[in-house]
Length: 262
Image (cartoon, rainbow, N blue to C red; front, side):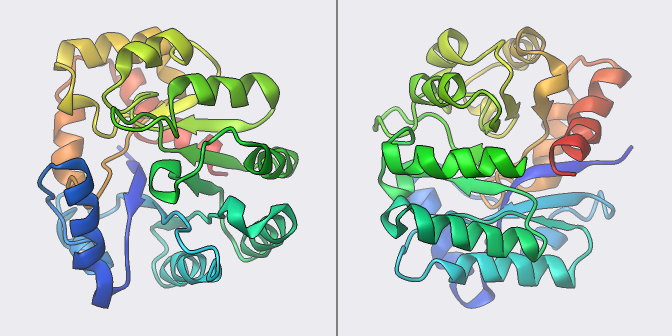
């Protein structure tokens, strides 16, 4: 069965371990990968045809093209890779739109935002204007959603985006709310947003995750590993052990992702 891992972060070799450690230190959980492309391919050897949606949120608004160019470069060298781009509200609306359009023209299939790392409220005025442009382009945007220690990316804020820009193709990562799944159920589960399975089994039992997938609607759930925190082979084995039907697996593993990232 075809598999698309929709939640992957990769970094240039010389900074990969440091970048991966920064993520590990922030979340206080051990990592399974080193953050490099080479490490990703090695730790997914059990599924040599697995495809990867790769992204890196723009942390330095003074150098917005650096991460985007790397994603595009990696995808150009590896046909199994699907690149996303990013922006930072500190760039302003005009510069953000220009950077996204540049990347879309070069093959980027969507946008990634991690506002907890980027330090802005996900539904602030400037990013909302950029989201309207993304919606007009018909591109998906992955939001990191949920953090017990900040208010930047809450399910409630993402619900505000959904209600304000209903034609925006939203992917609310981590089953709609990393470690805030009660808020996820209150504000996002069952809505038209897409989501992914990354990190969900850190806070839910397999039975709880299976129920949540079906409560949300399996046709809006995609497989995600969150490499380098989890290796794709390990993450896939955990999701594959859930009591899902073959039809549900097809949707989660590739059919929905093929539609979202077309």
